[in-house]
Length: 94
Length: 269
Image 1 (cartoon, rainbow over the protein chains, first blue to last red):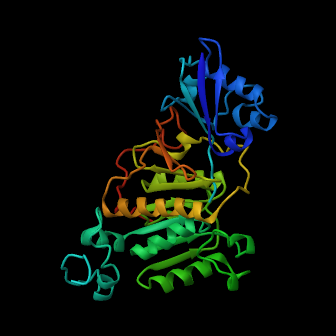
Image 2 (cartoon, rainbow over the protein chains, first blue to last red):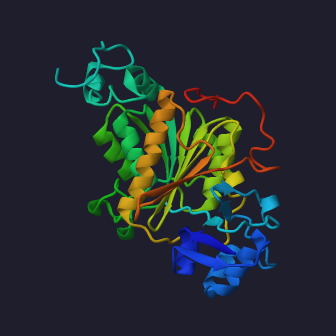
Image 3 (cartoon, rainbow over the protein chains, first blue to last red):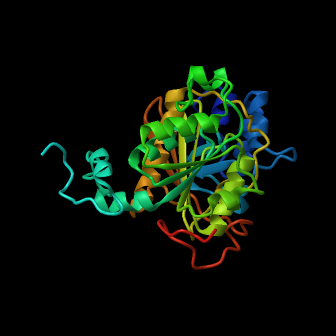
């Protein structure tokens, strides 16, 4: 299935692009998708997405189809076909 | 009639000179004469007066907020000047808050400007917020933003967190009873770097939006970004708005008490 991933902030800078269309297996979880993005992207992208032990960065806001997914639910959340996943790293530029 | 303002007499709160100064904004939606009086009575803390906070402070002063508390350490540097609109080349090396206070006093002598040559921290945030109805968080470090958030939540003060990165602007408003900045970002992200790409016009958009949000809050209108992360991409002008839920077990707002102050209230020092 196809998932659209949109990058913002430093994640966009590290990814080097605004968005990706990613092919993943049906039933892929959000945690699995983010791990796939980290594996496929430039090395600089990984620390923005994942902790050292491979979990989604706790400070990364993940929005699926317009709804922010709470931290305690997002690793296992199963993504639907044609979902749009927005990655919002916190920024503090002043 | 020269201006659009409604007929209004000067009183103890708004002098003839102030009514003349604000004439063009007294007819603005959500403001009006009553809102202008509320602005005059209000105090606002601005955490850092750089590209974002300096722009916010400039417009808050122009709008007639009665008292501004500016917190920012350090002196004017040449590489500030692409974005810090309160500063200027002849002021290189001078304390930023001194320069800002002079600039704002020249713009609007009816505004009381208090300056603090420190950045916001856990040690001083509550003290700096004393008497304020709202605050603008515009620091380049999350430790400062989170310290201000904790103090604002504790005191029941509205907080407009304004930030930018590259060509993105973000606004998030913390209101009593709603999700706080720690719900959105529970800790300082290890990936955040103090130096970030910034075009002054973009940080100015963030500061301007923050000023609009604060003015409306002080005037009694509902905050536009309460509990909502607003993300503006200035390359396309696409604007996303993401509802942020209170984080279960948030260490800042999860234990707060009921009965917090609303905009316009002034918590006891």
